[in-house]
Length: 276
Image (tube, rainbow, N blue to C red; front, side, top):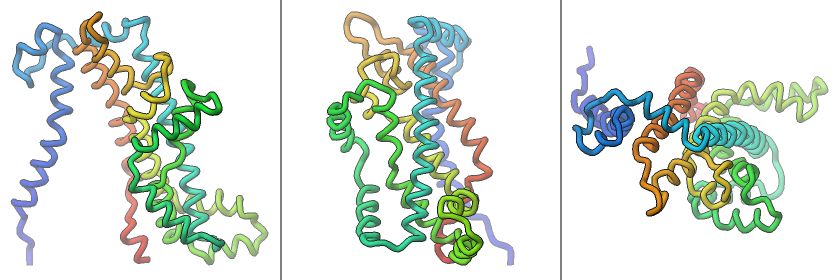
């Protein structure tokens, strides 16, 4: 019997997609407008000033925007890779080894998933200030390496996708624990690691509070903090609305490109993995 299409479900999905896409469409349209058109024309009517806005943004303080872009790519790229490796090793250890306190560690990890990152920003600042590491690249990179949610996902997937028999066979053949992990376990965990990397990359790319608290030198700012500064320059200088909107558009292009590049690997079925 042929299934009838669910128009209600399709309609709800379309409304959800429209709700998510409207801000993006607005940013695209607004970035094409000049300063005198931004508040005087129809919201979703395009104009012809996109490249002029990009040139103006690029010329601001000798290309400071592109320094922010590079900083953001550095924080998100290095932090995402490091966090993925730490999550993979920690998750693998929790899934495949038996040691005292394992259950307690996993419970603390689950509790860490529930704690918002913004709550930890001030304690992290105080800790790094004690060792004179604030206002450096490290002050943003180091707190980004540990991801409780990433470790949790890696633990679930390692437990389901890396058979104990394969690990025991590798040990019998004389492979050390490190070699077993890097040559056998990591390839089997690859789909989950791509998912963890994407989650962490996007989280670091969009992070505002941590770098805002840690950094005082605008040469170290990521895009979130830098564009916010352009929007809130104080009474001495007007807010650079068109530059901020154009910067926001440019800032989401790498995220879209990364998603399309890695989406074929983003097929982790944790529900099925747990059942298996």
